[in-house]
Length: 349
Image (tube, rainbow, N blue to C red; front, top):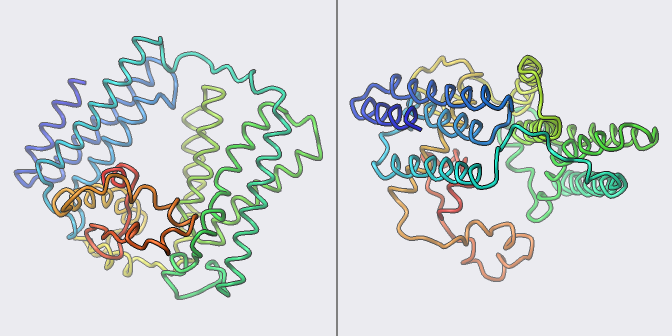
């Protein structure tokens, strides 16, 4: 905790002085150290406190680099919000560890899932059928599939039918369910094994056809996290290999979306116009969450007490058409096209 507090204070002071590289670098190094500290003690690659330190603190450090003209100095309230969020998680985690024992060193007891092979298989089958059916309905009604549309950068954004798209993207759950199923059933039923592999292929093909990089990464990431949670081990070298294997797919989907370096650097208003695309995109996906949060802090006139968070309910139930005021809220962002907002932002609306 002391490492984070000292680093956070130093990062704040460097940012106020305009030394953004130092501000970001010190937070990223602190995040890496805190993750390594928890991993070294527990040998658990998905130690919750370590992961939160890595992604929350590291992401904040990335945002502090201010590589885009859209980035601005954060409000003191924004800095305090981010600090309180980390302290709240840290203290809650520490309290749970002290009251309930070690969190992360023991192997999970997955034996209680034995006998649930059929329900798991049916859950995968139902999810796959619903997702594939919703995708085909959207493709038929809209008349196109984003992957096959050239020169249309916003093809994915327009491939969306209210109420149906939620089922289309549910395919991201299938790979994680299959990992759980394989670990329990262990391939004893050859027919189900073939069907499960086929369902995994469909679940990964839908994000590719939708040219959705996030959904594909989420599907693979959930499967990996499920495996680690069950086995409590995954060699870091394998994790790096998986990451490297995802890069070509990510690049292909970027090309399929009609996004080139000039276009993206122009949209993101990068200070260095020739910034490589493999730096520009991850940077903006991460940094813009924090910058948009700062916009919220500075511009939000009043709290909606969670009405925006319930948007899926208003959409699926059709209430948004009967009572438009339920969804009639502005989104406070750095730029109209960059609407990336995360749950920690939505819950504050």
